[in-house]
Amino acid sequence: MELRLSKSKYLSGMQCKKKLWLQFYKPDQAEPPSPALQRIFDQGTAIGELAQKSYPDGQLISATYYEIPKALEQTKQALQAGIVNLFEPAFVFAHTLVRVDILHRNPDSTFDIIEVKSTSSTHTEHIWDLAVQTSVLEGSGLSINRTILMHLDRACKYPDLSNLFAQTDLTREVREHLKVVPDHLKQFNELIHLETEPSIPIGSHCNRPYSCPFQSYCFKQASVPTPSIFNIPRLPAVTLDNLASASIFALQDIPETISLSESQRRFLTLYLEGKKEIHTEAIKAQLTSLNYPLYFLDFETDAPALPWLEGLGPYQKFPFQYSLHILESSGGLTHKEYLHTEPTDPRIPLSTELLNDIGPDGTIIAYNASFEKSVITSLASYIPDLSHHLLSLIPRFWDLLDIFRNHYFDSAFNGSNSIKSVLPVLCPDLSYKTLDIQDGSSAQVTWLEIISTKDEEKKTALSSGLHFYCHLDTLAMVRIYQYLKDLTG
Image (cartoon, rainbow, N blue to C red; front, side, top):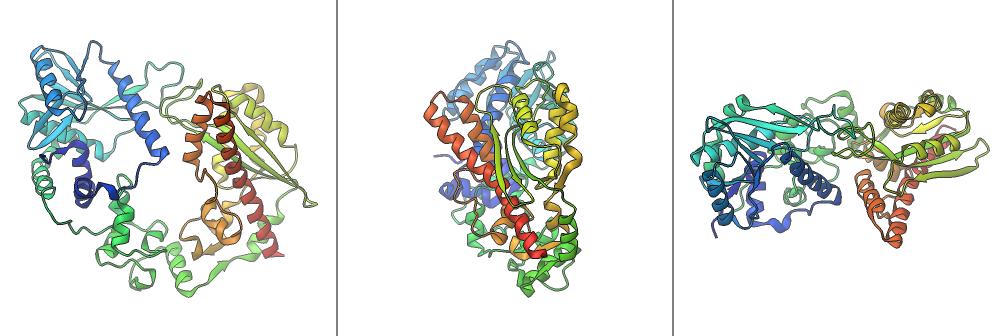
């Protein structure tokens, strides 16, 4: 069987040559896409189909990606017939297959390549993508005039989707990158015929521009410990790559001469000395400024690429669930919650319930409060009748995350201040790992299943998983708050 590159394989090679080789020879070592990642793929497919409607009277090359000879023949026939707009036409040149999202024929017999992306802006990898397509199509005898990225326009607001797409002409940038494409194709084609796995050091490219599915495999090969240099907060890519190239992964092996910021140096020093840095008086001052009852609030939100709620644009978030733990000065603790389970707009009923659950007095506590405040501000802009009441909540917020940004430092957090990193250290009896849902992206996917299923038993089971997850988010804040109270006396 002939080994052949594709535009996706070309992008893999641009990210990491070892990733490209592994895709051919050890695909079983790749982590399968998570439900959240699969949702991104599915959204991309739907957006691609919508984009085709912007080019009327187009012809789809229907042969699948497994029917390459058939796809090539269908493309040849469509070009000979003078079809103006082709969807998914196939071309092969220099042992490289590409299928173009949209190929538009100009009156002067030149062509425009339109690449459709579900992003709302352009990125470097889009230029790589368009460049390899241009190389293959020109190698196949076509004259390419423009290369265009068709992406989502954040100015679009549902229900008017007439301006869902924006187009950015990347011809100049693509022509610049095109100079190196033949060399890259030669290198990559030679690489995929190697019988021996290439030796490529891990580094910042393991997560840029995409998180590599072979990361666990490569990290295990390199014997990367936990924690490692990859846990140093906001370590510059060049520093990370220099250390990784020298096979320095353990924190204790980092040279003293390395340049680090104050927060990076603190993390490393605390780890090496096995200590914590806790500003007890500052934490106490923060806690004593809070007013009971304390409302521990967490939202779960969705931000779909294709908006379907009035007034929202691509990737604009809206809440579908909240959890609220209420702690009285007496120590009494109650829990309130709301989960929208129907395929309707959740914003008004959720806001109404939230205002009923939060009393007129007391501090509202969130972990990374800017997120919760932005959700409330967005709700207020959509619901004029509740706007004043919703906005009155904003000044009452206090951010628990600030304690761990400014006053409590522990290397056991592994370089992260997220609640999922802090909780198991301070409250080891609580854990997200026992839950069916363990992160916000999974919560989004689960909610979409809830509102789309007709199976009431399944809806109940999925809803239960979301209840447990969001409930733990706010209970975790309560427990962390109580830990800090005990710590400061």
